[in-house]
Image (cartoon, rainbow, N blue to C red; front, side, top):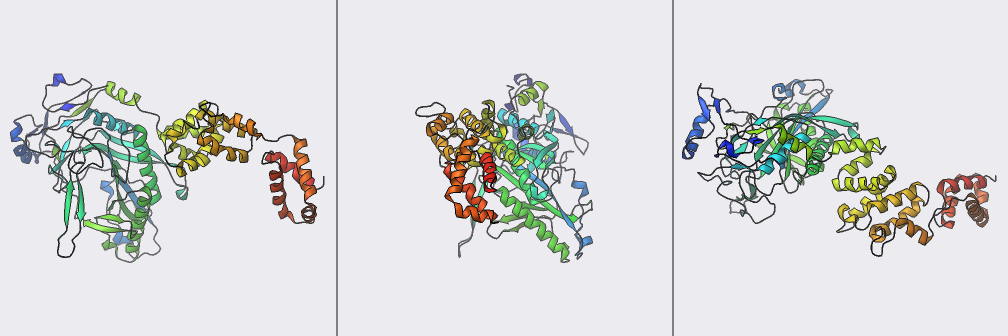
Length: 579
């Protein structure tokens, strides 16, 4: 494992050769140079003001391939009722990295503790402190970049993003602007059937490391008592990877599918938990509309504060309809560049703040952190420790002939994938196993407390499920009998030889539940049913075809659900016709 702890003021010789620092200077627009902060620490803040003249100082957000294509289009289409519009959507996703400590200090990175108990002079930005980048953050971030099929820069740098807000104790955020560690990626997203189905490639503009801000809790004014806000800095300094997509999405459902695939990737790689409700994964969606066929983008509106993928879909669809309706009504000028929040109660987006233009973040090189340089040995370590990812699993399962819907359910949970693969290795027929797992077994897990797919293995082992599915597949038991005994297997009767447990085959034999597939035995059952119901038989032969279902049910009941369905149906139809 390569060493990634990167103290900023140590000799180069003390750092591991595979991830190391690179010192140097930057050319400034004024013709001078900008130090990387290797001088007197006490002079740091004074040096920063001069550094704003550097070439890398910027008043715009991180560059996107779409930036040059933005132009107002609302005025041109104003009032045109017959003009078809389309949405153009891109997403900025912030993923918290699940390291034990924060990005640049040793404070614990945990959720839910008492406010302001995980802080220190470093993450609070006290003068004279120096950040030290966590090795775990770098390793997990690089794996996430590889999972996004990004080109990983062998040399990347950190920058200071300047803005002043109560949840940012330093007055700036350590981020990556000009040289992000990952660029030009792509992720395959399963498109909802409503949008045509299939798989669509969504471009990834960049992935960069940065630190999180704190959290503000706002309390509104009550009567004469003014409103106020409380700040919790436990989250300040927690490691993030920001993933910026290309504007390749067109509907709310596509946005939700993209977000779900990002979370799936994050969980498979174990770089984060992707919990939207806790804020460990946050998606800011940029929405604009334009006439179909027009290349220039419309006015971009940012939508925030959606704590589920379903809410993301609804928020985006509402925003598309809002912008389109304004343009059609001749009020295109009311579509302004702004940030809006999703109001779940009102089922609408609500304006938070207007944006007169891109924020002036005054980026410049972080003087207290050296550049990151990766060699091939470190990159190979990252690749080799990555698990099989959702896209590859979907391809593998599709090759087994599984329906796309079953594949999506299986791939949603990596523990479910592990269980299913273990059942396949034990000889389970793929389609039968997928059908039972995604249907009855998942319903059982959903409705039973304290039982998950990981604990299920102690009651219904993958080998026991394989035996059960094989018996259904080869006709030893019918699907109805399978549904009857599955609850017992899930409750522990199929513990594959455990204490008090019996295998599925032993249960079937003990209860006499084997499927009747002897034609003579089935003919006898059918004959008895017809003899017991002469009136219904006469009506059926007189043209009342709906009585077929009655006879099918009667045969099934008479056989105790054991009659082979296909065989009993064929014999029944012959006898009903008098053959």
